[in-house]
Image (cartoon, rainbow, N blue to C red; front, top):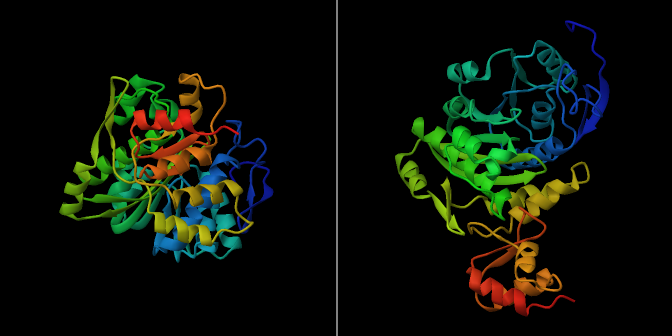
Length: 354
């Protein structure tokens, strides 16, 4: 029985229908007993479910389970053999248990501090989806992942991650940041740096698998391996970026996506998932491993162009000059290319706008 009277309603997401607090208000109010975000977090869950459907780990820790919807979907949709649900909130665990029982999830339930549980047990996959910054929890999460397993991390504190709040960025993430034109990508590079640091403390290297942002959610997925040569390789992928006389970092400078994984996950997409998740996986499957991107609208304004050039014309012109060029998942206004700023400016001036 629940410790006090709580009204729950049926809510369908992906291929499951579960009981949750009213989704129209549960993500807007602090008064609800169990939190559920049906907007940005749904896209986060859709992409994560499709990714784990490809990776097929042996188990997953839903470390801050709330309603249990993420863990139930991993079992039902991704085919994960065992799900461990944990939450410090007793009402959340009762609800997660009720939802898991509906789908006969092979599950274990804990009402523990996430960090304590991660210190005592090991898992093939840990999903860390806190409210705000994952920084207080990520060292414990990295410890709990078995070698060869996966760590999925979310962050919603976009002000420090984007560089909009430099003091908080330094305090929470140990990075010197300002807000550049390509700040959505910067956020995942800071989060990967944090993940690398946490993993390295436990003798593990990271292999980035998937990274994306949607509204105020930032998400990264990585494989962790106890492999000294991988840690050494990772160190070379940590660095600084200079823009307009300002230095950003340390951040992750290496690749962000496993494009083959994204392509396979995209093949599993159907109408039960959000269109935003399809777009994320499609762009991730084509994303070139280039640091940063150009915001076309920002550059057109800076160059005082009368009209915004056509994106396909810009991309074609860059490719004709021998550069890689693609639309980027970080912004509808962005193009990712290895062209230098002078070349990009020349192409922008010469590209057709009609």
